[in-house]
Length: 260
Ligand SMILES: C[S@@+](CC[C@H](N)C(=O)[O-])C[C@H]1O[C@@H](n2cnc3c(N)ncnc32)[C@H](O)[C@@H]1O
Image (tube, rainbow, N blue to C red; front, side):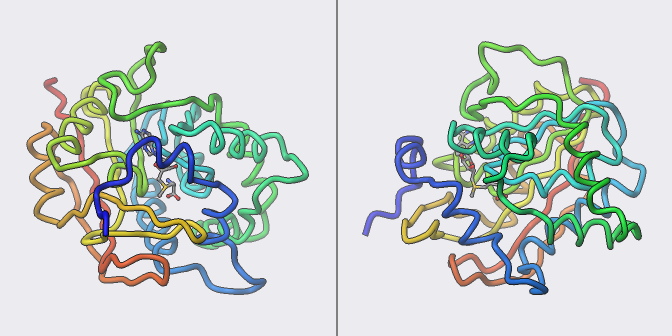
């Protein structure tokens, strides 16, 4: 069995945003969120409502077709840039921003975050706020020294990325180099929040199997420190998924030193 990390060609040919949504995000009416989305949204809510992370610009790296990861960020930032490697994902993101009749439905996630914020009556207001705050949808390739080449973006205050680096990087050396390139996108003192799964060797998107980089907490900690960040918080939660063999989820919140 080939368990090498799935490369860019595999993503271009096999990653279908609708199948991804159906595999991980589609919910029956009234159903609870899956553990992984619950984990991600609670961490983002906690970090962004703490007042520790501030500024104007936030970049979401490898967003896929998902906007839900930005629902807390739009309360803090005035300029959000969403990015992904795949045209098919950028198309889905634009559909949601334009309220296309075929857009993906993120309402349960909007409700979840509004509940966390104690504003459950305002789902439409929340969606509008996010739509107004997303100023650009850009193609990115985190494996490039400048992931937004040929664009040169002004330095950002915060970067977030969920389940992206394990998808893009073939080994821990690449993961660490990618973190270094991402650091160049940040202002001194800027924040990075990376969330993903540990010890996974595969995940399904529909019936298609993808192989991420298999990581441990130690690997990630070492890479973040070697890449030159200060770790502010590292949370690990044991968790299982019906679509993958990971055994836990992680959230690392780190900062680019002010002196750089
Ligand atoms: C498992 S999905 C995660 C999507 C979304 N962030 C989420 O949490 O559901 C992995 C994402 O990484 C993106 N990706 C893969 N290689 C990449 C690269 N070299 N640069 C940027 N994104 C990449 C894919 O296009 C895909 O959207």
